[in-house]
Length: 256
Image (tube, rainbow, N blue to C red; front, side):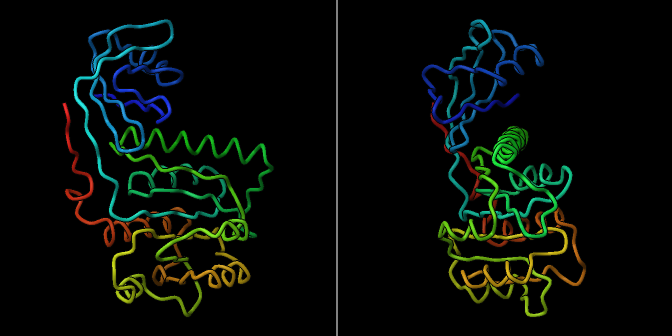
């Protein structure tokens, strides 16, 4: 069954309506008609199975058949990702959604090749948020990660974000294995930051800044990974260790 996203501000199970690009996709690409069924979600854990009742101009009106609530994952993982060159950020955002990241912060590092002015940054953010929506639609994720505005490492830590555990991928010799750090941490953290650098790693100054704000450097093994591989690897390990059994995390409670 096809899935469509309705923003939380427009979410009203009593009067469901698809508008904009979602309505266009359903109407003009999928050729959906009254009587066809679809799944709608709001990115905040709510999901409705609905039936199209009418085509109202460019919009589609739907009737709720069944509603479900998906509890949030047991650990909120924020990925701070230095923006790679090319389209690799699209891939990273897509996979981060599939693996279960709760937030994605694009980072402009000193070694980031991509340079963005304010307009470019806003356009990139909008594009990556769209990638996140499409990934959530495809993989059945009902909690939509927010893709933040691109910012430098200094700007990110200047906002004084709060995390139970802060990690940064590092090629330095004193970096520890993630499993060791998690074992030392004891209690399961509720909010984790994972920082991944650009090609060539973060600069020493950026690493020192991250350390001064409580980030612990972790090694990703003896093989130097590509940026997109490093992000997927780290998120996968954190998901396995911290998000718990999928049946515990994603089981839906249903309401008629």
